[in-house]
Length: 603
Image (cartoon, rainbow, N blue to C red; front, top):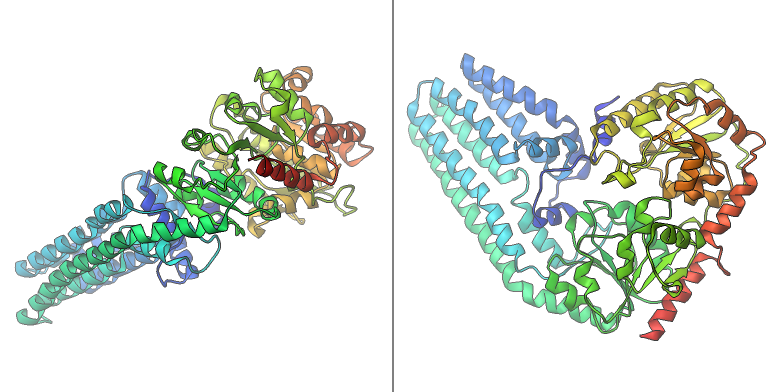
């Protein structure tokens, strides 16, 4: 497997905790560095960093100044280029404590040893002093960014846009000076190292060499002063920008607010799936995003996206015109808006399945819970969540309205393996990926009758490294196998695209299986806990219309033959489709639109 694909496989690994201002900087990197250059540097970052450090140590040992200069330059420049890429490798290094300033200091140590080894103590001391000033100017930047962020107003963000509004860009540019490796630090230290090596090798006369080092020190001080002045200008503009944003939103008179508070980067699959339905509404709304890590993954939308980290901004942005507050998940900070009695608080969730999250007791906090159909209400009742019938509203599932129904007619048929992720707690640990996924895909490929597509849940690997290993192994297997097999990430295929193309779905307890009911095609559900079939169906009722597969895969040949053959569960799936989706008159988008209008009018 290539370095690129392994990077994709481990991309879900978390990074060391970072402040919100760093996420803002990364949401719209404000530099001019082309993205392909940053991505290329990110791919070669680890080998270049390791090799350059070894060469630098070797150069210091053998007193080879120009080899050392080359090695230092290669490592520092690639580090700078890779900063906007935010690669999985740099995240792993950050998790171990090897952040960019420490990595730079580790490069400076053998470089200083090299200069001292040339026999000119003055040159070595001069280089060390220059490094101290450059590093000081660098490490002060996070404090400046923190000070600036504490007064930041709500900021409008344009998902997918090449250019952001001026207030957002101004903040991101100031914050970016404190993120990763700044180019100015690389240039200044490179000049100082070159001058010191020139002094040590007698290629520069002392007057010139020490003048250059002194200039580096002065420039480091000037750079710090300039960044501080720029931050001060932004700080002074913050009240005005906040007032202008509030005035613009007030004039828009949004009817609804979508509250986005999620774990890191989950907007890519929780929020984005609702954007087409929200964009189709005749009313205007606003997306209120509480964590900056949600910004970059967002798809474009016609509704304003406002980033507001401070709780006081939630109250200010809940404008008098807002009649409805939509929630897509049980975020930890939902209560900061739920406390406001003015809008109707509506839980939409982001999928319909037999997972415990689809019958959460926290639903009691909402005025209404909009669900796909009767199966969802039955799920709440079975879980003991007591809500009056009138608090449930059936809207179907707008996300599946465009999926084609019926056989695809393609040969050989496509079997989509789309396992869920491992969950955050035991009640939602339903994944088959690291339990039986690798052997399952190996058997399907060996079967020869089908093409295998693989699309794991986007959050796979958030807590179990074995998930990442399984993703990598399955990816290797499918790419190397003969036949038209596919890893969905290789072509950036969306979930709806995969579902539309699949003849058979193999999944877990997941909303993916529920959504696939719309296609009327066979579903095979994995039971990684190896429960007796009756117990499994009693626990997860909507799976009664699916063929079941257990960890030993003993029934794989039989269920695959049934799914690709006479398909005896076809009728059960049709009945389950009506039970899950309710199929409202006019379709789910019409039901969604009508209920938004109902609540908007009732305000």
